[in-house]
Amino acid sequence: MTTVLFDGVGNICDFCGLESDAFTDFACASFTHNGGTPFSIRYECAWGACPACAVLVKENRWEELLDRSVKFGIPACAKPLGVEAQVREDLSRLHAEFRKHRLEVH
Image 1 (tube, rainbow, N blue to C red):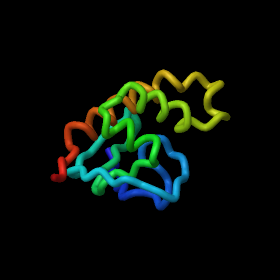
Image 2: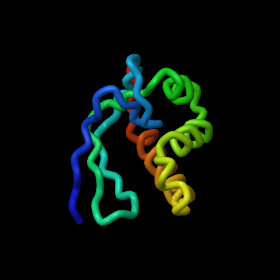
Image 3: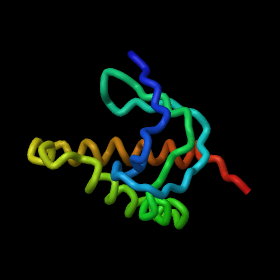
Image 4: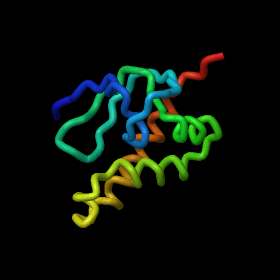
């Protein structure tokens, strides 16, 4: 299995994938996630959240965050392919890994 390093993407929210000029960073220990693909992704950075996703993370509204991630994270051209349930399941596991490895900063 190949591991790909992920260390953030400019002004793109790490949760919903939308562009934003304002971010809240959430510290997170490094972890590797296998999303059911031939490769795994190694996350080695803080996660940047747009204002809408940051509120959901801070308030532990994980199901709403998942809904938002699925709504904006799947390209419109892929939705007719029936991938939404699979993507939702993988994002749910990814969010669980984020919660497990999130570092509380006081």
